[in-house]
Amino acid sequence: MKLFLRIFTGQGITLQGEINLSDLPNDLARQVQATLTPENLTAAAAAQPNPLMVDASEYELVIHPDDPNQTSQRYELVDADDNIDVLEVLDDIMHEIVRRKKGQS
Amino acid sequence: MNSHYGCCHPIQCILPPHVVEAIKLRGDEEQRKMAEALAKQAEATRESRQEATPPDSFLAAPVLAMGVAPAVNREVYDGKRRATLPGTLVRAEGEDPVDDPVVNQVYDLTGDVFNLYFDIYRRNSLDGQGSTIVSTVHHRRRYNNAFWNGTQMAYGDGDGTLFQTFVEASVVGHELSHAVVQYSGGLVYRDQAGALNESFADVFGSLSKQYTLRQTAAEADWLVGQGILGPDINGVALRSMKAPGTAYDDSTLGKDPQPYHMDFYLNTSSDNGGVHINSGIPNHAFYLVSQYLGGYAWEKAGQIWYDTMQVINNPLATFNDWADKTVEMARERFGAGSMETVLTRRAWKLVGVDL
Image (tube, rainbow over all chains, first blue to last red; front, side, top):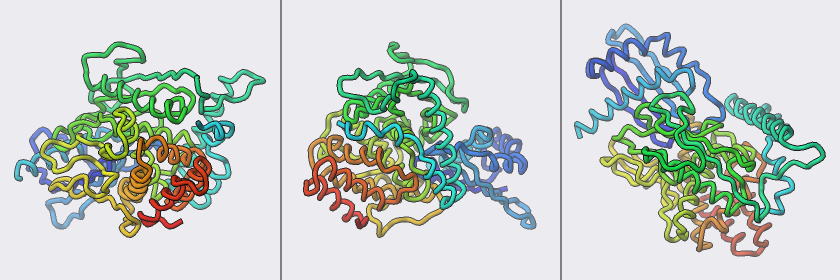
């Protein structure tokens, strides 16, 4: 499974990258499998943002399954009070993507 | 200084019903949600004013008369890297510094922003009514952001790689100025109105830093978020008002996308219609006015922009609407043929906003 992630930081900067599930540290890979389920992601994407909040972060996640017969799933999420568990896992994935990018450069 | 607006200011702090109706008719779903939230907040403000105001007296104007003592009231909370807000209170107004330098920085920088608004524009705190300024530091884990959520500020620590901190003078001023926008009638956080909201926050974030350092327009760096990027990032700040589009150019962050002219205005659906991108255009107009007028930018250019926010009364304002109003404010304050009026108009022309 490959994860494409784009995070708009809320300060005008967009981060993006992709990573294979197998390339994530074991702890994080387990968290991904436990937290980023279709049910959790659908609920997190439906979370209502605070309309008065400015500079909120926005997230886009595309999950590409290993099986070519399965379709990719795309989710858009924004900062909200009741989807933090999912967003924090996405932050950790981006941290790993950036760490690997910076390590390679 | 603002005496000629003082009498009507309380009304301008409240989203007028006809504006809400206009947004319901013309706005999209997000704009309608924003308008409804602003209207709810206005109603709450109206109720709290009524509760706090003795019968037979008039409503207190948010713009204070000269000679009234300021009363900054700060509360800084430690979020302990969790998402719950506000967290644990660690320093309240008047208390001694604590061991955590981030707490003390936010406390001090919040005071600096309060001072700009009070000393120069006679505004008593974010809402003009002396509200407590609530901030949470250490929000979430490795959180690469800071925000105003309608009630309080929250600052992440950054991940240490891309961002080292979000507690920096212009960023704190930026977030607090979003609150000033909200309590001044609001600008819907989408498309050009949203970019004006962002630009106002950048302008007064930069001005609060300049005021604290007593820098002239020529001496200021005109950067927003100077020094917050990680040590290995090729960049100096989040944004440059002097040269939009040049704040960073990095393999991980990409290139600063801000335009400085309407010819390069970006039509996009992301970032609420490019609010952090197209804000480069009004940002640069403000920078130009400040440079033309010289001296301290908060005195004339800042006053024109602040006056504009107080009277524009249009949550869906476009760049043209805002530019028109800045020229009108310059004319009212400095005279029709004044350099301030002429140069404000010229600055807008140079960024491609024709009046």
